[in-house]
Length: 183
Figure 1: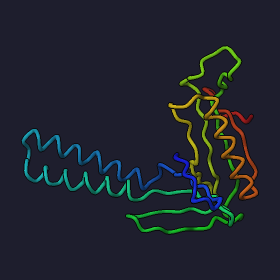
Figure 2: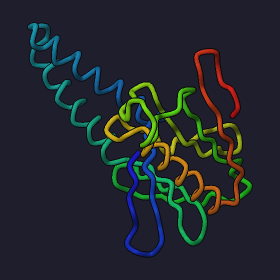
Figure 3: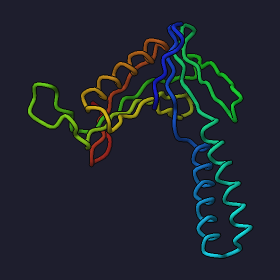
Figure 4: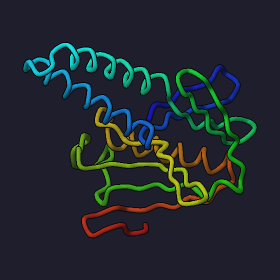
């Protein structure tokens, strides 16, 4: 989830990762690696070698030339998709959106003054944009590079921006070992 600030027009974009499109092309990427290993082992060396190269470049082109973004602008929330560098934008009206969901791990991160690890690897936070029909778009996922308290602050700011832009309700949940509990 990469945040990209716009060109000064007050527009903010959040990259969405995952989904069927990336899943299929990840499988194609691993098939290319399998063909490369088989070609190295001497099984149909030329055919599998050419197939590995073609599939490898196709999967890399497909994944890296086809990002998806949730755009928060003055006109509301929209979904910007690229398929092989060709853009398509779809405005998400209030009827297409159900809400914003923030999911946290059960153990909260230690803040600056508290005793505890500032780099707790067990802490996670995710922000989902809930679409009608039950679909979820993962707008933010905490990374391992930042402090957990910083990730939590960023997630709440993103959830607040989405809620304000689309006039959406926000649901906070804690996911533990025993399932999902509403906070």
